Amino acid sequence: DTGVSQNPRHKITKRGQNVTFRCDPISEHNRLYWYRQTLGQGPEFLTYFQNEAQLEKSRLLSDRFSAERPKGSFSTLEIQRTEQGDSAMYLCASSLGFDPDTQYFGPGTRLTVL
Amino acid sequence: AQTVTQSQPEMSVQEAETVTLSCTYDTSESNYYLFWYKQPPSRQMILVIRQEAYKQQNATENRFSVNFQKAAKSFSLKISDSQLGDTAMYFCAFHFNFGNEKLTFGTGTRLTIIP
Image (tube, each protein chain N blue to C red):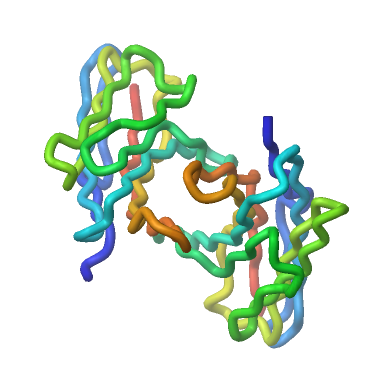
């Protein structure tokens, strides 16, 4: 068990560029979650997957954001036409998908939009 | 909409002392789960303790225990014999009953253990 991994750990981009983050969950975890954490705040839910199916999306997830989990394993989160307000830590978590359903978090990807 | 409130942005305590972090929440649901997560500086978030709302007995994990008051919608975390490694941001969070596990977090309490 190597834990949840996220790449890259840091990303600096210019406004208007597209960025993609990757999350590799703990193997055999069926559920995968994306959260966004801004400075001084707790994480906020963005979206989650049960295997390859995206079951829920937050209103925070504008049409510039898209997430996929094509084979029910790793997931990608893409942000198109980045804005300075997108600067945040993007956290991924995974869980087995049955009770008790503890979420295990990755180290996050810190995005800075200049 | 459900909310989680942590009214103590920062706390500090001497090593080996006991400290209590406060959390209140608001929900109209009766079945839910409550959590305390720890986020050390530049490290990933880890689960400290969880509490099922249907259980009256307070959860305990080694030096960590909770005081769960369902009627008051209060869920405080007590850390006994605090250690330097307890220095971290602590987040209170909850989710509804099984089948809707997206976590709602508070804004966190920054805890510093002083040697």
